[in-house]
Length: 144
Image 1 (cartoon, rainbow, N blue to C red):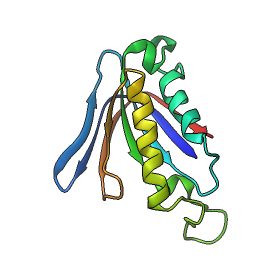
Image 2 (tube, rainbow, N blue to C red; image 1 turned 60 degrees about the vertical axis):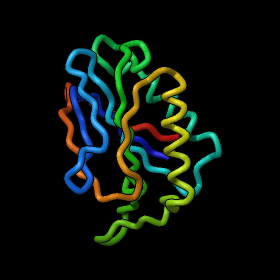
Image 3 (cartoon, rainbow, N blue to C red; image 1 turned 90 degrees about the vertical axis):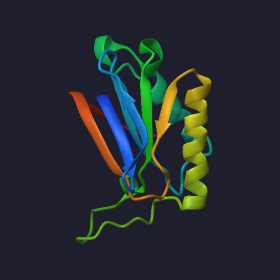
Image 4 (cartoon, rainbow, N blue to C red; image 1 turned 180 degrees about the horizontal axis):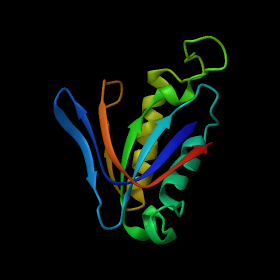
């Protein structure tokens, strides 16, 4: 599993002209979490990713989402698992199929919400327009 966590002041996901998820955190900052679920992920990899989203000290003042009371925009992104070492077309063979990946993304969202974190989401499997204002800029890669 791979996640790209970007510190943002605001971010949104639009599908077919409709905003389906958005966060606006000009004071605390928030996290745009792009998460790719892999075929060979450990059964508890989602827990690690949820923990990192909630607890990494990457917001202003070296605070975590939990400490800052910040929001998260969670977006599934299978392309994070693309292999690009050979040829000119990425291989998506390492990405989990939708029927495996979607419940994992939902578990991450549920875990974050159980911690009292406000979570907005993209729409699984949809063509999404993702907009964000990177605060810093500050982006980290998490692998679990």
